[in-house]
Image 1 (cartoon, rainbow, N blue to C red):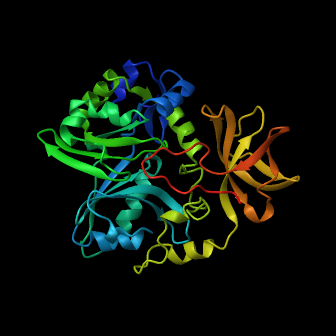
Image 2 (spheres, rainbow, N blue to C red):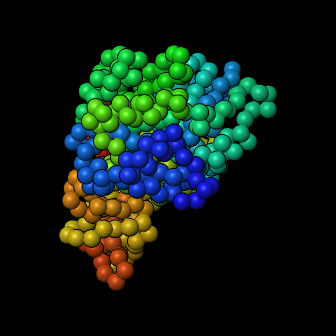
Image 3 (cartoon, one colour):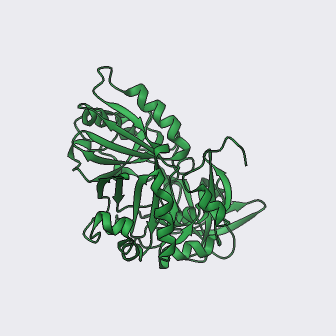
Amino acid sequence: MSENLRRTPLFAVHEASGARLVPFAGWEMPVQYTGIGDEHLAVREGAGCFDVSHMGRLYVHGHGSVHWLETILPARISSMRIGQMSYSVLCTPDGGAIDDLAVYRCAKENFLLVVNASRATQDLSTLEALLPDDGSAAIEDRTTQEGMVAVQGPRALELLTDIDLVGGRFNDLAPLGFFRFRQRADETGSWLLSRSGYTGEDGFEIICPASETTSLWEALVARGVLPIGLGARDTLRTEMGYPLYGHELSEQIGPVEAGLAWALALDKETSFVGQQRLVDRQQGTQRLLGLRIEGKGIPRPGYEVSQEDQVVGSVTSGTYSPSLQAGIALALVDTARIDPKRGAAIHVRNRQLPANFCDLPFVPSRVKRRRRKRTVS
C-alpha cells in the first residue's frame, strides 16, 4: 500500500482481523472480511458494522450559519429542528453535483455536514470560498479527531441497546425516528448517534472521539455484529438505488437526473447556488432507472444500454445482487426514447445481456420511514 494513504482509527483492528485492505478515496480501507455475499446477507438478515470514519465531518457555526447554508444548499435549513438530519446536494451553478451530503442541526446555529471521503477536500475548498465576508459563519474540519461507525440491519436496534457504550449513553433508542439523532458529551468527548444509513435497513450511525472508536467496534463484534467491508456496502446501496458520487452524481450528472428531486426545495424563498438551472433541468429527459438482468451476467459502469437496437443510455453502477441472485444496474437513460414496459439490452463486450426496466429500490426498504418508489412509467 502507498505510504500516502490515510488510515482510520480502526485500521489496526481491520489489519488484525485479516480484512482485505484496498485504496479508497485516499484511505486504506477494508473491502471485505469473510466475503461480499456473506457480508451483504448478514446486513439484510441480522446486523453488520461498517467503518465509515473516512467520511468527512465539517462543523458549521456562527450567527449567520442558517442563512449561509440556505444560500448554498437546496434544502430548507431554517425549518430543521435541533436533532434532525436532512439529505442534500452541494450543487454547481449549472445544477450539477459537487457532492451529496447529510446535514445535522446540532444547535440553533451549529450544524454538521457529513460528506463523501472522495469529495471532502473539494467540498471544504468550495465551502470556504463561499463563506460570508463578515465572518458570520465558519467551518471546522474534525474528520481526523473522530471515528464513525455504522450499524445496519434488522437486529441493529436490539444489539446496540445491549452495548453499554451506546445504550448507557443514549438510553432507549426505539423512539428515535429515521433521520433523527441524539448527542451526548462526557469525560471521553462528544458522541452523536443518528438513525440513518446507506443500506435501506433499519440502522444507526455513531460519531465518537477517535480514541473511543476501537472500544465501540470491539463491543459490537463481541455482541455478534459482523464487520462489513466496502464491497458489501456497495451492493447494499445499489439494491436500494442510492447514488454514489462519481457514478450516479457528478458535476455533469446533477440531482435532477439522479432522481433526487424529492431532496430539492426549488421554491424556497432564499435563492441558492444552481437554483434556476435545477429548475431548468427538470425539463430534460435524462433520468436514473433500474435494470434487472434476465439470466446470467453482471453489468458494469460504462456499459451501453439499448432498446430496439438504439442506444438510449449507459450503466452508472452495476453488480450482482445477493438478495435477488441476479445482475442489477443503475443506468442514466433518455426516458423520451424508451418504452419502460419493454425489454432492453446491456452491451457487454461482444454480447448483449437481456434486461428489464424496474422500479427502484430493487428490494423493499426497511428504514422507519419509507420513501416513495421511483417508478419507470
